[in-house]
Length: 331
Length: 200
Image (cartoon, rainbow over the protein chains, first blue to last red):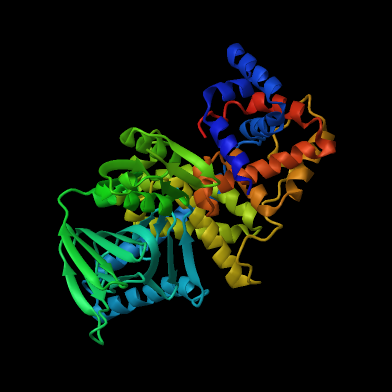
């Protein structure tokens, strides 16, 4: 992918004056951009292609399929009626008949899905600077943060393997929901929590409900089980075998879901490491002074320009691009 | 009922409101069916998949209420279900086969000034594009999905979608037979302006 061209197209699509030039709706803007392309003729082809993207292709509007619509809606309503009839009359029938019917229905609907390709794992991944919302087959929802990967097997939809960071909202069920990271396993029955597994450590923050962590310590053959309560933030690294439990009063651990990462009293090198993970860039600190500097700052996780500008403001210095995808902060 | 937003309808469906459910169904049926028909010629299969999808949604209303874009979810779900059903029926193709999402001459808005020959050229050019680029064009200009929504449906990044569109239109420009295309699209645009909006 030609990232430079794509970023330029993206910038133009968000520029009102450019759009006015495309639609020829503002004489000042038309003149401005025509002047610009006279000075930069090499950019004109890309601009023309962007213009094509904006104007697009004129298709007919989608036809109304009234016959089919009526047919499907009737079938749906019939099915819904018959399901509620089963509910209403189940009290008269012996329990085992109702259970058998439910079990058959359950098997039937699960069977169609699960037996299609049970061996291959389903994988969801995000790019740098991107977040994704995912709905799992059991209706649990996951928000996947940037540069992260989530996978599961069709046969075991409540056993999730995670690299990176995700926020889980787990459907209550008798089947335990497990999140496996390289450091530990999170075991849940149904609740909301955040798992951050990057840079050789896993951090689990519990928002609501109850969660168990299964942690392998090298001095015992079995995993140790740790219970978490809401507000607990547990950090564990398999590498150094250290477990820390801090209580979090405010919810800065999950603010990334709405696009903001909050760093509280963190050393600048650590903040830089997180930005690197999210955006796929390298940040170098020029002086020793910067390496021991700590701060509290909130940065967006989907807009690198604003993130860097915020850093510039707080540090009162310039962030320079010195190589492809490498930035230098000097003071 | 028909002027309520998707979010409101979904909330109502969560409380078991059948009228809200029927409204959401009618709002999306035709476009989902049209999309499904482009993926497979088997119309009965498309109807069944839509039926199963909406039944599932009525029984699991929380699914939709947790998502930002119900529209992307519906499209993604239909796509997944159709592919799964097609896979079960015949050859194991994990991705959309190259032959799907073909445009027919009925898909285009017909203008008086327009030469039938020019339109046929455009149609043939589009159908020769790789399936992924065709799908991006279809979802954007036929179904009017936003670039962000298309990214969810096609399971690629936002930049990935722009890349698809960029490649398709770049090829169009360099294709000598379509040198009249820019004029064609300007006149088409004037008619399409009622459905084309600025926000991307």
